[in-house]
Length: 83
Image 1 (cartoon, rainbow, N blue to C red):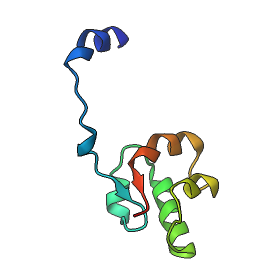
Image 2 (cartoon, rainbow, N blue to C red; image 1 turned 90 degrees about the horizontal axis):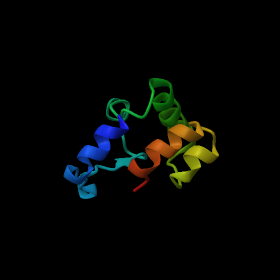
Image 3 (tube, one colour; image 1 turned 90 degrees about the vertical axis):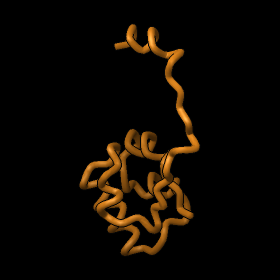
Image 4 (cartoon, rainbow, N blue to C red; image 1 turned 45 degrees about the vertical axis):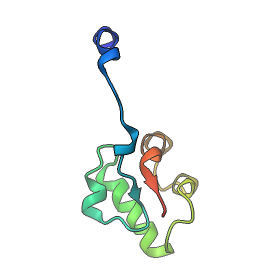
């Protein structure tokens, strides 16, 4: 609840250096499926597109090509890399 967050917010620290990026051009099915923001169908679509069309040229192309919906893209975008 929001009240709980406000009561604890001064005790919460986020270390963004610990975030492991998902290298979308190299990730396998099992590892991608572990991400809590992606559903099985989305993982399959991401990998199928890559297999048929070659490596992604940009993370943005995942949304531009309509591979996943906008809300999912917004959630997952900070964790994706093509390198």
